[in-house]
Each structure stands twice: as structure tokens, then as C-alpha cells.
Image (tube, rainbow, N blue to C red; front, side):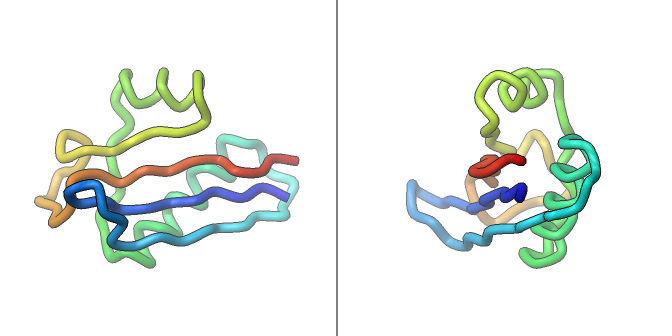
Length: 88
């Protein structure tokens, strides 16, 4: 089972959080993108842009923060954090 935890923060306080589970046989990358799409739909957000910095951080730690720089639209929080908490 693959699970991804997503949270939005403002002033170091959690505003929203959700956990997305995926039991499919897709690759890890496909699971991450599908889970991020679900998170964006649930939080009513546009999809964030993966910058080189965010890609390298996610590869290294399995966790990344999307700040204002990663969104085309304005956001009403400081950052969106996603973290892989369980992998197959």
C-alpha cells in the first residue's frame, strides 16, 4: 500500500490535512502524481509546479514543501507539504 500525507500550513499551524492511499500496481511516480491530483482536488488548489529544488528534495527525503513559487494562482496559506508515509 502506498500512502501520501498532505497538509497546508499558515504561521506554523496546520489548516488542512489528508491522507491518500493507493493500492494500485502503478509506479511510485504515477502514484505520487495521482495522489497529488487528489489532494489538489480535495483542497481546491491548482496543481503545483515541480521545480528542480522541489524534485531533488522529494527524491532525497520523500517529503517536500510547495510554496507560493510553485503555484500559478495565489494561495491563502504559507505552504503545502506532502510526505510519503508508506510504500509498497
